[in-house]
Amino acid sequence: MKIARGAGALGNRAFFIYSIGSGASSLGLWVQRLALGWLAWQLSHSGLWVGVIAFSLFGPILFFSALFGVLVDRLEPLRTAMAVNMLMGGWATLLALLSIAGILDIWLLFLVSVAIGMTSAAYAPIRLSIIPSIVPRELLASAIGISSMIFNTSRLIGPAVAGLVLVTLPIAAAFAINALSYIPLIYALSKVPPRAAAPRSRETFLSQLAQGFAHASANRFIRVQLLLTGWAALFGRSILEVLPVYADRFYSSGAIGLAALSGAAGGGALLVAFLTSRLVLDSRQLQLGSIMFTVVNAFALLFLPFWNSLWFGLACVTLIGFGSTGSAVLSQTLVQMEVDDRMRGRVSSLWGMANLGGAAFGGLALGGLLQLLGIPVGTVATASFALALPLMVWYFIRHEPQAPSTAATVVEQQADEI
Image (tube, rainbow, N blue to C red; front, side):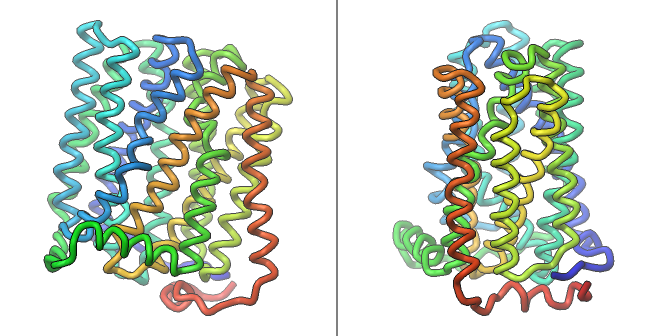
């Protein structure tokens, strides 16, 4: 294991500009995300509906992200990202206007959430391809870690802002904040030099799609990581999609409790993002590390329902944010290190499908379980599944012969040995 030295990816001017805009947009995104979950709970008082809204926001990624991944490999990602973010800002504006008009019911909220989810499905492979198009390969691990830190700083601050908005202002203000937050990102993307678009391929769309699946399947690191990422998102991280149910029903703490729980998850995520941004690991270490963080997430979820104190809940959710984000950062770094540049958009879309699509299904399933079985039993059942697969994979990986990794040679120059 090694520790990176120097400014890392932030020393790259293009990445620095992009990071500022991305941070502003992430802050607005977390404000809106918390507001949507709370609004779904207020309109329905149903854990299932909260899960449905969470699924509508991220479920389309599972079904359509791979298709958009093929397009990303054909297009210039930065300019495409500008167009998609303009559309995302438009959806946030529409939510604000519908809220002001007082006509936003649970079904209309669902329809707009589906539209946001479809746009997110288009943006997921683009977002994962932006950083490799900005920084050189030797700075890739540093850039992914720093981007995760920025995202999770927003995840820590955003709920506090959202909680303040929800108790002092109409909920439309939260959507308006998100709409305005896209302006710095769009401006930043316009200032980053674009990468030349890939040569137009003569292969059919379906042929290129199949190549992406084949490439991911042929690489043992990517293959195992996609499975683990999807499993961890489905069972381990799903609680983060239905926090309004825990805040109001289990802890009886309302919007303030929701903001505190979401902020706690962000705090744990920010800590692990900082730690992982300083490490340089080879592919095997990245894989074992991602499994370890998944186990931490699952154990925290397992203990959560045994004491309905908000303070205990905050500690558990902090560990859930720590474990789930640590696993995701190492997983994404491993996939980006191992993937062929020609396949980056397609394979990135598969990782996005596993991570965000799995969380969407997990939120839907956990929302239903909480409604059917109650919070304690539903949570323990989910945590038990979250533990099963990572422990099995850990056992088999620890006893398999080590193979050479591309990741270790790529980042060798970044660090000195501990």
